[in-house]
Image (tube, rainbow, N blue to C red; front, side, top):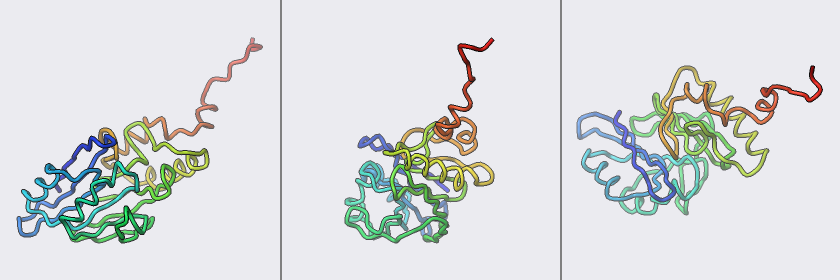
Length: 206
């Protein structure tokens, strides 16, 4: 598989294209989070003679979907998301635990609500496209303690529990590995755990 990473100045986000390495006549690609659809993205698809089979949306925030309008003017391809519509485009609705066949790709859907209600991670072979739910050293920001607890629980039960190691490809920032995040991501430690892990010093200790 060939992976193209494109930096989107709008929101400092990452757009990804995953493509097969078959003969030119059979090459297929998926685009993940088109925060922008510019000449560089279009040239990569066209020069590699990819047939664009689908668009995966990790969540409906502007930084990750702004390029959809332009993309849909060029390619008649399906959009896959946890939301039934993204920016007035109808989607193919996916849910936690689904494994979706898109052309020659098999994509597993892992729902991680918290940063947004529709946040999803897509597992493609050894790659995890995590959106804003999980980044190198951080987890997604949330607007309530309930959302933060929900996200932490989903990350632990649905993502960190995956056997083996995977490459983590976040919506912002550099790539990482699932193994590195298991051991070093401070955001995966709950506030209660941080509190109980501190030494319990007292002014009255001998």
